[in-house]
Length: 292
Image: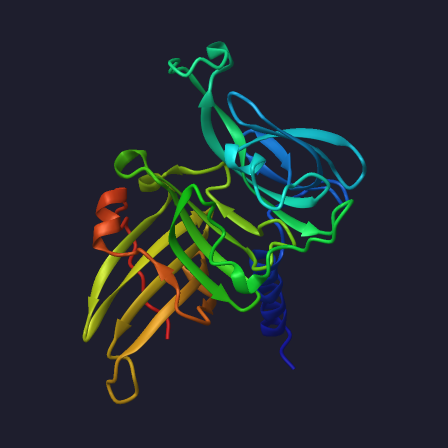
C-alpha cells in the first residue's frame, strides 16, 4: 500500500485542525493569551471590579491562577448588563486610540495614544454570586461589538466567521476578521489582522463580480501563505440553471484549497460595490473562484 499519499493526507488534516480548531495563542496552561501589537494580553479572567474613568472603562481581573491584572476597555463595558463583577469572561481586544494621559481628562485636548483596548467582554461561566452562562449561540449574530458595523457574519456549524468594521467610513475605516465558537465559551480562534484593526484598504482585498443570473462579492484576509476568504453570491448554479446562492468561508494555503465552510443559514453581508468603494478595498492581484 502506498504510504506517501496517506502521510500527506494526515499532514493536511492536522494543518486544517490547527487553522480552524485552535486558539491563536496560548500562554502557560489555563492562561490563554493573544498577541495584540507588541503586547501579549490575557483573554480569560474573572472581573473583580470595574471603574469608568476619563479615558476608558478600567477592568480589574484575576486569571485562573489567581493573578490580578488590569485592562482598559470601551466605556460601555463598565455599564454592560448583566454587570461583569464576579463573572468569568473572555476578552476581545483591538488597537484603538484613546485620550493621552497628558490631557488629564480635558475633553478639549486632542492628543491621543494607541492601546490594546478590550472591545468585548463575554460571560463564559458562573460568577461568584449568580449562575450566568455565556450568551446563547442562538442569540449571537456576529463577533462584532455594538460600536462596530457588521460587514459579514456567517454561521458554520458550532462556529462563526465575522468581519467587523469601525463606524468610520473612507480612509479612516478599520477592518478585522474574527473566527471562533458561537457561544463565546473560548477565546476567538482567529483574528486578522492579528495586531488589531487596521485600515480596511490594508487589512483585506476584495471584489464584486457579475454572474449569469446574479452576482457575488468576496473579501480576503491573508496571514503568511494562508488566505481566508468570505464570500456571498447568487447565480444560475442549479443543475438545470435555476438560481442558487453561495456563501461561506474558503481557506487556502499557497494557492491550494484547504477547506470551504459553508454558511448554514442566510449570512449578514454588506459586501458589494458600494461598501468596497466606501471602505477603499481593492481587488489586489488575485481572483477568486466561488466554490461549489
